[in-house]
Image (tube, rainbow, N blue to C red; front, top):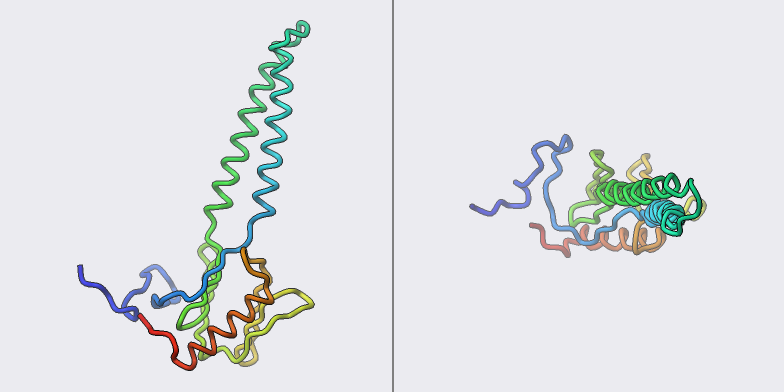
Length: 173
């Protein structure tokens, strides 16, 4: 199969028809808090269920069978809650890609793209801890937290990639 040039490779279902280009830096939206919350609730349910099942094993009275069955349901439910929740969280497409031709923000099916030539300035807004991309009169604010990098550092990295791209220091395709 012949290899396509970067300018020819596009996603046919992409309404923006963004051409493929090499990615210089890539950061996923930080989902740590949501993952920890999901795991904590799942683990808590499993511990409560384990304690209920222990009443069945210890044989503490006539209601021990009810407690045991309830415990088994809670253990299975807590595990399913955690696993299914993690699958949903980690399956989400949310990232920012600093590419040789521009910046791309993907949030599920929504995509926002700006070419470096269209961006006048990249800065960090300390008041909102957001990366701000200025294009003419329009400001594009990235207030999300990204894994592995603070927003102030991301703003510096984006400004550096923008400068290098505008000077033509990256090979395209």
